Amino acid sequence: MRLFLISILAVYISSCAGLNIYNGKELSENDVLLDTTSYRPIIQVDDKISISIWNHTELSIGSVFGVYNSNEVFGKWILVAQDSTVFLPRIGKVKLGGKNIDESKQILTQLYDDYINSPVLDIKILSHQVTVIGQVIIPGNYSIYKGKNSLSYIIGAAGGTDFYAKLNKVKLARGDKTYLLDLTKLTPFEMNRINLLPGDVLYFPTKRGKALDKKAPIILAAASITTTILLLISVIGS
Image (cartoon, rainbow, N blue to C red; front, side, top):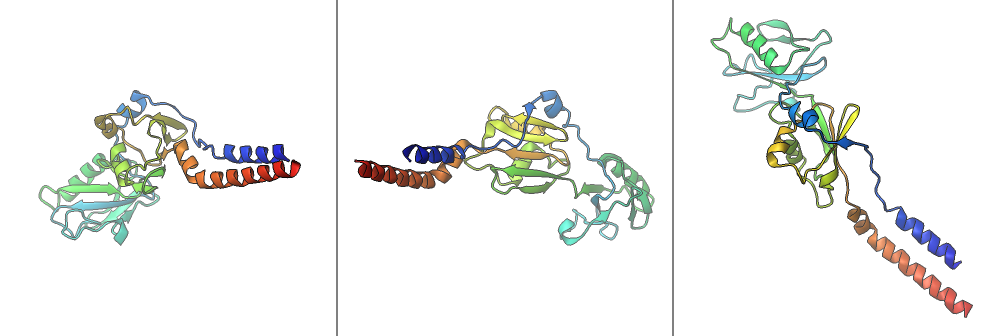
């Protein structure tokens, strides 16, 4: 009986061990730090995009230049059709699918130049997102676009990490690859150079201490009950 109770307690305590959901490889500077610094988002079919034209709200869709900015929350966007085109005020149908942001700006600037003197344009892809999970304050999906897709920016958007985040074993899943990031060894400059791409998953694992802290009252209660039972068995046996 005594051996049986001790075995149950041992199994319960061992169940507190955390699970690692990703298998990764060591961070490669050439793969992650350098390759994505020149990242230009590509407009794709079914993307939601906003187009802002300075001083021309009547031609803009979700303008960032107006006093009352409109964005995806208010439905101020246009969907890229299956033929990779969008229909825009005054100029009509334009093929932007497959083009990056800079190429798309150049195309629209040339088209609107026939109607506007030196048009100033801004394009945002509203549907490109990354996922942040694990030990952060606000896990979830976050929209990204150039200038606001760095590792440091996304961590800030998620409210930062909590006390139990294991910062030396952060996982970045990208396609069929997973990278291990040791944030304790990265400088702020390096973290700002690591740009996240659409579909990336950033996972902050948990320190073992959290599981123990959470289950400590239960473990102590179980240990107390077990001790009491063992004492009763000892008294009865004597």
